[in-house]
Length: 142
Image: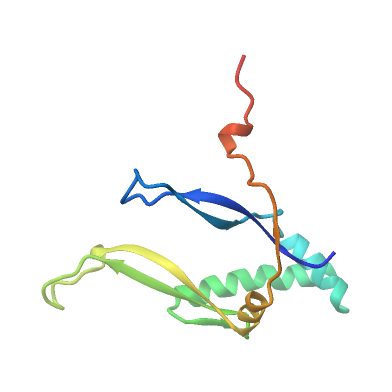
């Protein structure tokens, strides 16, 4: 079977105009997860490195990325992506009045590289039914 991104069609209403009919949009549906162990197994099958070696490198990569970001560095993972820290919060009237207590939000910005851009440009799609919401799948208590 060819690789394809699964999606379902869902209705979305405009929160600014709740009385107006909703419109229908595609929503990507995950087929599962690929954790670090699964990724290391897949990488092992593509090269001569053992799964344990790949897992060790990927685990070390997590630590190195976190340290680099905490040090204020932009992390570039080749043509895959880049990561950097972004800050936001309240402003001060003067430079001298500014203090770190005014920083209220910190996040990591992800910018896809050419490899991921190429993947997006060649995506194929497969329509599936919408997954039921969590509360719809739970059994009622007796």
